[in-house]
Structure formats: C-alpha cells, structure tokens
Image (cartoon, rainbow, N blue to C red; front, top):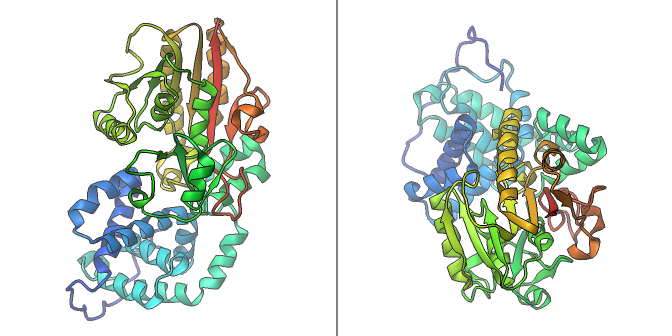
Length: 454
C-alpha cells in the first residue's frame, strides 16, 4: 500500500470501546499478527501458524478461523491490497502500527469468507484500538471497511477480470515467458481456488475412494471430495494411506522401486516419497539435513508401519556406497505449491530462485555420485520455474555425459500424456487434471526427469 502524505492530519479516534476480548477477536488478532509476520520476515505461513497457535490459547474453532483468514488473505492478497488502496485517498498512513495487516485480515473476511460484515468490521475496529499507533486511524479503517462491504460485488467483478491480480509481477513474467500468456493465466486462475486434498494409498485406490467418498485418480491417488479432519478418517490409524499431492507422487512412479533394491531418498522430509518407496518393498535410506523434519518423517513412517534408514546429513557432502536408484527432491522456490501454500507467491523473490538453482546443481552432482552404473536417478522439484527444472537437467547432462535421459511413457503415469514434455520429462501445471468442479481440479506444479547411469 502506498504511503499517505505526512501533511494529512489523522482522524480523531472514536471513543475506544472496552477492550475485553469479544467473541472472535482473538482469532482475528492472531490472523493479523501472522499476516504481518509472514510479510515482514518472509517466513512460511504454515510454520508461523504452527509456532503461534499453541501460544495463542485459541480453541479449535477459533484456530480454524484464524488459519482460514490468513490463508485467504494470501490467496487473494493482490485483490485485497488493490481494493484497500483504491479506498485510501492518500495511501496507507505512516507510522500506523498494525493498521495494514488488520485491514487485510478484515478485507479477506468481507470479500471472500462466510463471515457477517458487521463482525469483520466491528472486531477490526476494536483491534485497531488496541495499539496507540493504529487507534489514531480507527475512523479511517472503519470507513474503508464499510465501503468495501458495500462495494463487494464491484470489487469481485473487477478482480475476476484481472486474472493476474493475485500473482506478483515477477511470476507473471516468468510464466508468460516459459508457458505463454494463456497458460500462465490459467495457472494464475487455478491458484485462486482452494486446493484439493489427495491421498497416496498402499493398495486398492478404488476401494479407498469408495470408503472415503473420494475420487480415484488415474495415477492411483485418491482425491477427497470434501475436506475433513484427517486423523478421524477410516484408514488413518491403520496406516493405510498418507496425505500427498497427486503430482508429488509422480517422481517415485518414474523411479519404479523394486523389492530388495537399495534406494536413497535425498532431501526426504517430510517423507511422502520415502513411504512410497518403502511400500514398494525397497530398502530405502531417507536423508535430510533437518532433524526436526526427520522426526516428523519417522512419526509418519511409524503410523504407516513402514521402515527406512534415516540419516541426518547434508546431501551435498554425504558419502555412501552407490545405490540401485536415487531420488533427489531438491529444495526449490516451491512456486508449484502456491495453490496449497499461497504465501509462497508473496515471500519468494527471483533471487531466491537463482540462489536455490545453484544449490540444486551441487545436489544433482552429489546424487549422481551416489548412483551405481546402470542405476536410475530421478531429479524433481515442486517449482514452475525452468531454471529449477528443465534448465537444471540440460546443464547436468552437459557436464555428466555418463548419464542419459530415459523418457517417461504415458502408461507409467495413468495415461496423462499432457504431463509429459517434449523431452520426455514430467512437467505438471496447476490447471491440468480437470475434475468435477474447479476445486476438485488441478494439482501442484512439478518437474521430474529420469536419468540412467551408463
């Protein structure tokens, strides 16, 4: 939001209301705090919520509301910021404390959530009064939010016409260059939808789709029609399935693990791909440099009744006897996960992509050294940026002539030929995989290539 001229005198604040917590205020307070923290520190939304929720003391309903507000705010942040800016004659006031995140959280409710307008506005004004810096502008915030509520239909109509309105400019430029404007627009539009929830199952996807009121996808994943509490669903306690985006399940299908093979899963946490490999009967070594993330991987494997050798190490420098197959799910900008993690669009920058691309090249070479002759190496990223996918593979093959690409065949991935590019690599895009409704369509943006060591 633009700065307001310092010559403007702040509106006289209304008489402050009693600041005892009204129902729903703690949830809004947390949502605004999280929005502010993520944007200022460029931290991950899920990690910020995970850290702040236990300290907040919110009950389950309020915690769910706080999460919904924060996620919606980032999913439609461009629309929200434009709508607020258009109703601030001189821009956002300076030295106004939490004014902007409070208005952002309230606008997310007014425009996109099933929340009474009066509750969103009144609680936002009460929240503004809690800080002396924002209290000076409570009347201004009140006017802006009430106007947003009156003009909601016009705001949403304008937003619908501006398909790139919720996508930062650098991503628009990157995607238009890589995929063309029409495809980039379809991707941006899909990111506005709530993501589907997919499960990987040990066996019998059709049977589990019936039990869970889901849809059996061509690649063997199950997509739930309705979002539900995961831990309460049939099969959870028995370890029959785990949550994993359908596109994220593809790299292991390229790896095609076999019983008895030794396979390394590099950068393995939180363990969805490790579980796939172990379920296929292979002996898997799961490696990651993050001990906390590996603890989660171990817990997931324990619930599933699967086993793996778990190693805490940096894959760039780790040494071991060569493996029959190696999977490298490299750290990346994660722009392919924007639909599920909308904060990624607003916390990542081009320099993050370029810095990670250098790390990916080092990891790619390290993975190659761990692959025995005749062995398979699958490299993948959950990124839509060619610098982290197609260009990485081209550069790797140029400096490693002992490897060749083994193109993916449509029948290996449920006949989904649209997910295979001209080189025979996997390239999934968010708007692919059409389903019964927009919410039940699409999947994450993924790149994967399969290489053989000669």
